[in-house]
Image (cartoon, rainbow, N blue to C red):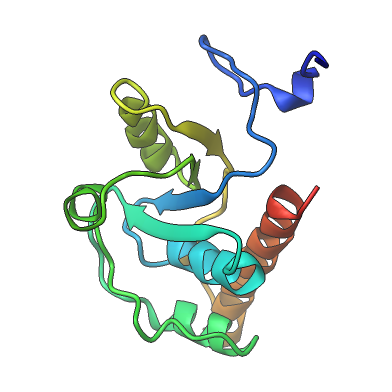
Length: 162
């Protein structure tokens, strides 16, 4: 049996080998309206037949029209997405995920609390918040596009079959 390399071990005090490829992933951000729904729709599109995908937020927010526009540009649809908190997801579907990918600091802290009572791996992907971008409509859209494209690259790299 091969010993896992440093890149295959999750960081933290209870470091354990990272699963090669999880069967289910939950994307989490602050309000489940920008980064986590973007990541979820991308992952579902890229790996939906082989990866169960969910999304949630620390708090519930309101849908963001810039997210819809950025996702529509690449031919995907967020039409059925409804922002939900982690507690609502747990109540409706349960938390039977192999991996939680957190996209904001508050989501990461909340996900780490889950590991106290659930055997779930957590990965932190620091992702800029495009809602903080200023400027005209096109400049703001560029911030959302940049987040979308960064998430797509990370998802392709992390979940590709090995």
